[in-house]
Image (tube, rainbow, N blue to C red; front, side, top):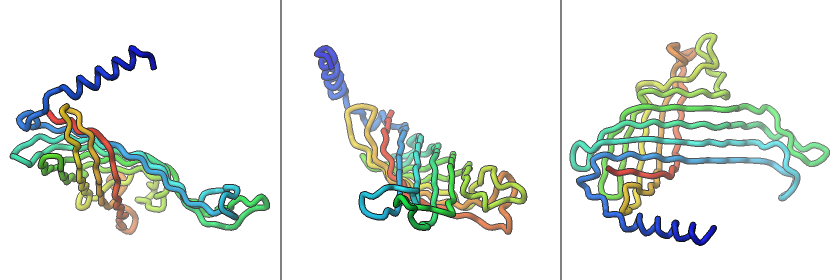
Length: 223
């Protein structure tokens, strides 16, 4: 980094610190963007540090969330959110090791997946803390691992969330700064049931339940 670049960087930091604080009167609208990444692996080896073979379990997930809410009364806001996940998930059974000491895994199931939620939310906000509840009015999931849940002859189109259970709960800690852009930490819980593909119910009218906790890191923009 050159001397001029260092001076420019320091000047930028000073400008951010010198910006006036955002008053409560200016923060009727809040917009948040957050993301998370998760990687999970399980494997068997002949010894610690030994040759790696096939993994027993392998999961990778990228999560993105965009939400916005407008204050309608003191600490209470109403808005909407978009939630998107993409990743892969595979799991198999350990069957032993080969002549080179590598793990052999059989019966592997899984594949790639994507999930999209769009819906309204209500938010309670006090100072640096906010809690939100959202409803997945539109919820769809493409999942290669769930072709065992057909709806008639359809085993590949997107699974659709039940209108009865598709809820999102989020707790946010927004770090105070003197700018419109504030770092944010979020813990999110989602619960949903999938009960159809397109407009057709799953065979035997079964439902597929899923729930998960997801930590997210992002930025809150208060206007």
